[in-house]
Amino acid sequence: MTAGPAGTAGPAVPGTGWPGDPATVETPVARDSRQVRELASGALSLADVDARVSVCRACPRLVEWREDVATTKRAAFASEAYWGRPIAGWGAPVPTVLIVGLAPAAHGGNRTGRVFTGDRSGDWLFRSLHRVGLATSPTSVAADDGQRLIGARLVAAVRCAPPGNQPTPGERDTCAPWLDAELAFVLPSVRVVVALGGFAWNAVWAALGRAGLPAPRPRPSFGHAAEVVLSRGSVPAADAPPDLVVLGCYHPSQQNTFTGKLTEPMLDAVLARAATFTLT
Image (tube, rainbow, N blue to C red; front, top):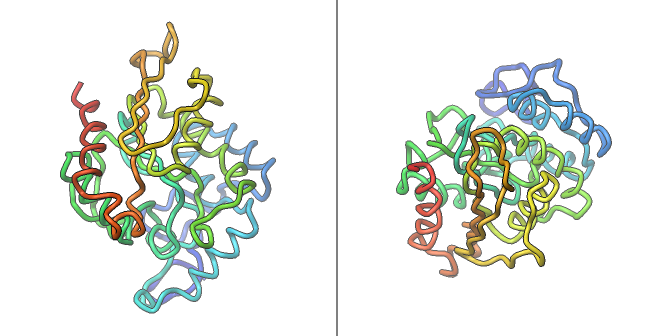
């Protein structure tokens, strides 16, 4: 089943024309945690990471869930094709700002093929990104909608939509090498990392530690607008600034936005702080 005409059921097949599909029929597929580690560490470019991420099948529960959702769909999207595969990071190829969230939504990124789009959380996020100058449009509804990020890249800690938005610890750990591989290519240019929610906060600190950056001990506690400055060491990567800033932000989930735990001014304040690093 391909991503072809509207109404098609099932996940998009690589090489069949889904907008922005980074993979082809020749992209190697990871089918267990060992293969994830091998393929992630062996990626030769950021585009290579994106392609390999997008066809991963290492977590059976997540594969079954994302593909079932892509087949059964939600009634409101019954006429649409669903992506139904893992979601690669996207945005500026040499970002200053890296925004990390938990995972794609079942009828958001899992439908559109682009992380944090197509649902109410994404609506909140992109309106804010646009207001602070990190996105060209206040909306993002599809992979080919013309949206562009300015100096920023979006990525999920877990690349597949999990049941109940709750990946297991094993699924989190299996997916971690993809984030590590992505960081290897973008970290030299990144000046600030924004973690959307506590899950992403912990994933970011773990990944930065694996990348060799000296994380504070104990690990900083998550909180909205939390800000931690992390030294890259006396000899940073070529042309990289000596410090990296990590910002915490409540996730723009409906649970947070409907209850007022997260307001638009609160979200704007954190992302505006991140945006200041694109100007210096």
